Every structure is written in structure tokens, then in C-alpha cells.
Length: 218
Image (cartoon, rainbow, N blue to C red; front, side):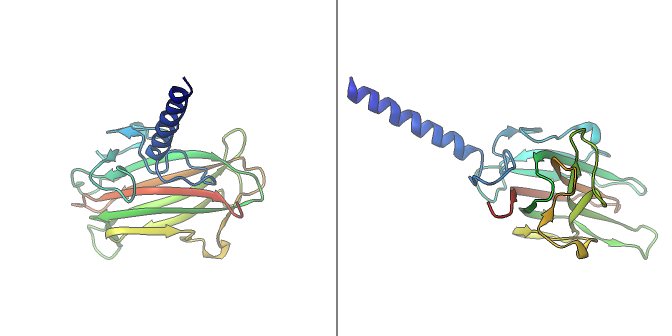
């Protein structure tokens, strides 16, 4: 009887371990849920907000099993068909995480990309295709707070054939510095992963994995 009980406990512990591993890399201080996109299938991305009503011109988000930095899956943002002149493609995936005003946070992620386009303003058929990562600061009523009410972390317009780590960068707000400090009134940080396309004939793909958002010092 005792042997049977011990065996049951061992099996239960092993199952729990496998379930935890399936969620992606384990960091006790990571506020992101499902950071490695291991939970989800196809266009169903668990724990993240991926509403197709916010997508434009055929751009889409899905779980990809072919590419991954760790685990078995990653998030794929893509424009399957090239845009026509004047069209704009857009896809957005977000997650809200709790924060405390006045505290500082680190944000990091890994990405791969193909088909991104550096912005061209000199020609008639100008445009770009980029990966942008933002932090929007929200109050208890889910309204924006702070001045500015967001931190623009990344504006990536160049391809990466191998996985690249991005951590605590700033775009267009270099004077604010990093890590990212939650402004007065903030109780939530909305992490935004987006791909925008305005360049004609562009059909980019961006993979993201192992997203981490953690309080500094924990």
C-alpha cells in the first residue's frame, strides 16, 4: 500500500512537471503567462489577446510548430499575400500584466524575421514592414496613464535568419532610459506585439518566443 502511494505521488509530480514545462521557459519572476506560446493551436493563442477584428488586409497571427527558440512552438505574425499599393497590413497580439506604479520592469523577447522592409520615403511606392513592441500603461479603469502613456521598445525593419534576443531597448524615446518605470496610477502594463506593413509587394513573417516581463530586483 505504501509503495503504491509513493508511486502515485511520483507519477503526479512527473505529470505536473511536464505541464509546467509545456508553458515554456520557467522563470518565477516572469509576469507573462504562456511566454513561449506553448499553449495554443493554430489561430488560438491561449492567455494572449489575438482578436482578428484588429487585423487588416489579411495579416494574421498563429502558433507555429516549425520554428521555436525553446520548447516546441512560437508565435508567428505574417502577411500571407503581398499588399497592393496604398493598402496597409496590420496584426496585433497583446497581454495585460499587473504592475505597481513607481516600480521598474525589464522586457525581453526573442525573434526571427524574413521579408521585413526598411522604411523608404524617397520614392512614390514608399513604405515599410516592421515588428514593433510596445508597453502601454493602464489604470484600474483600463485607461492610459503617464506622459507619454506608453514605452516604444522596438521598431525592427531588418530580417534575422537566426533567433535574436532583444532586451530593454528604446525606440524614439531614448532619453527615458531603461528598465521601464511604471508611471503614477498604473496598475497594468499591456504588452503589444505587432507587425505593420505598408510597403507594396511585401509579405513578411516574424516569429516571437520567450517573452519575459519582470520586476527589477526580483
